[in-house]
Image (cartoon, rainbow, N blue to C red):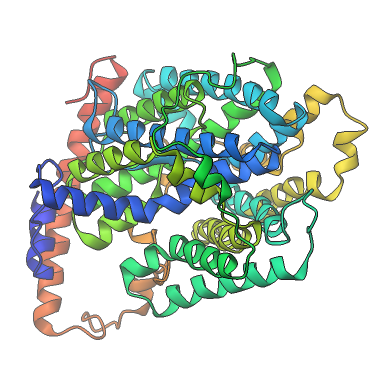
Length: 531
């Protein structure tokens, strides 16, 4: 706590809402709904994209959106509130991972599309969720061994690949949606361009919170314009019921096929890295120590939520970095705010009319917003790679060759459609899968395993930038820019003294934390719970 106290003293701030504080109901509702606003567009865009790619009917798409929101709420409550040794008990919002979008579309199209494709996807999702849940109960030594596969050169490459592979999905929607009669119509690009411009303007000139919900506002504004011009149809809203419950296995009994399961297991490996990074980040923000047991509890919640998602007609879940940034910006650190947000999401998941409104967003509008979001995903990967010495030829080869593999399915689709077994094609016909696998294997060949420290593979909280805010400088940049006289430029002597006090406190706290972590890890290795 010395580090936290010193920071508060130096910054003149007070943490009025620590992580375990239960706020009054009005504040819980207000702050919780704010999390929902920041999260909503990212939550609903995955079922929309996947459902559209699989050619689901409007009614089926509405059901997917409701199921997603309902399960998001349950998953967030499990993560933030905690059940036994499941859940990090930190303000972490759970949402469907973008990592799974391209693989799920590949699985679904390989299975012929429609609801039959959903059954194959759900079989893979349930299996991967249970595997993740089981893995998180392994001794800490086994967990750390897996994390050593993901140093920054691998995680940065994977995230960059994810964004690059998803951008064409957004562009196809911007053109009107593949297979639609008006695909390529200039008016679709006009809607996409207008939506994108609106979002970029909000990010440029908006206040921080306004910037954080720019995607949502862009979708609303674009849909309103399309409705006025007669291109947004809300007829299905009237047909949708007021109340609807997502029932288990709504589309039928899941099908468990080998290759889709392997593909989804790879997806969950990637999401484990993302959740681990978000757990360390939010722990640092709220001033709560994160050890290997905390990370394991977060991953157990991921696994449980993912398996539950497959049962309740949804998809794989991960901790959302967007909401980690919101915690940092608002300084509202109570995990019960996320519990309140989870309650709001469950309520929204019970309202089919709300989902029908979302499903009516025109393809062009959706494509403009999605392209911005996916481009930002690619940028996050590039920011991670900025920490890597790419002048080193081995690292450069890992990144470059992995990107080449990731582009293979889109560049030479005939290889997968005509010259490959259908089962094998469903596994390999994904840029994310090929790129991620190549990055892991090439890094092992050229660099070997990373140091025995899961955090070496992960971005720190200072490097998580909100939309519309500048990214933090790479590690070491401040030191390079500081004058040699001992006083950083732009700081008064008093501020410099305060900064020195903070650093002294941080060094003390770091030593204490290292000792506690070592003790906890020994306990983990022995099979005992960390204290």
